[in-house]
Image 1 (cartoon, rainbow, N blue to C red):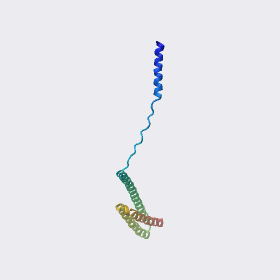
Image 2: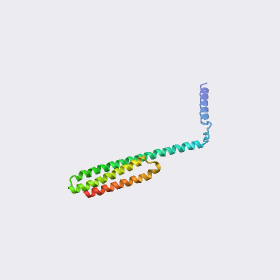
Image 3: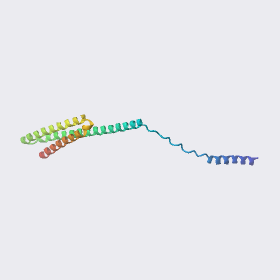
Image 4: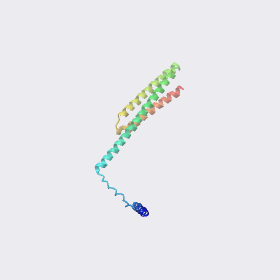
Length: 151
């Protein structure tokens, strides 16, 4: 009886292993076809446009910040020039004070361009950027010329 019982248990286990290995293979479900509506497209386009606007405003703010920093650096360099001319002769001081006054006027014009640029709309932005760059270039060139003459 013991052998009979062991054989029966072995047969049951063997059957379970055999049937477990031959399980029915399930196929993956058919992918559902999604229907894209015009409102979905509009929504996605709106989100894309907003993301682009956010990116452009971010770039714009970064550019304005850099220009502001550049104007601050130029202002500091103008102040250094003012200090340097104090050790020069009266004639040189007078000449360079006039040049520094012109530099300050150019710097004020550049700051004014920066303010206009901050207030400009998207369409005027590129044109205003060119005006800003021209004002910075002029100021930088005037500074370099004055600094070179003073050295």
